[in-house]
Image (tube, rainbow, N blue to C red; front, top):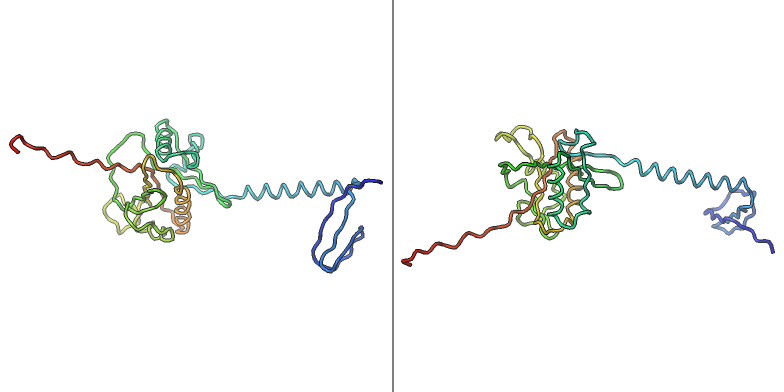
Length: 239
């Protein structure tokens, strides 16, 4: 008995004429193509290569979006970071600070099916006095997101409005003019997990994109300062 290698292709629908060997029902026609034909093998190989090329081109069409003042700097000084690579939030902010203090620029990379987002966080190596208003703070606590550390949780659908109001930053006290930038401080405890932070930053960037503005979006990542209880009251010897 002669063994025959073949590829079976199923074509849905009715109608049409096929010069090859076939069997048919009312809804399905099956075409059997013998792979012993060298020309047919070549056609199939070319077809598979075409599919691979189309798939590769599709993956390369993701749009690059960048946020923060440092996006204009030289790429050779940028160090890519991914939130998923860090076990704790403390490890993440330590790495941002380490990169900054080594004369480099931390670049947080967030990838989706349609976009690649580069977030350049606002960070300084040397500490200085800077006490922004509480409205700029977004606090992560056990996977929950709060504004100014207070209930209720942030409604992600309201982020566009919050950018225009709560997160608008002015170098001067005159808040009637166009804001100098949008400033968001994301904070969490050192031992907190990074779960949910990447998703929030990606959503924040999407809402910022929807504003179609040239105002820069700046994001900082800070630690929640633990509450230190006051010292016990001093008691005099006469009490």
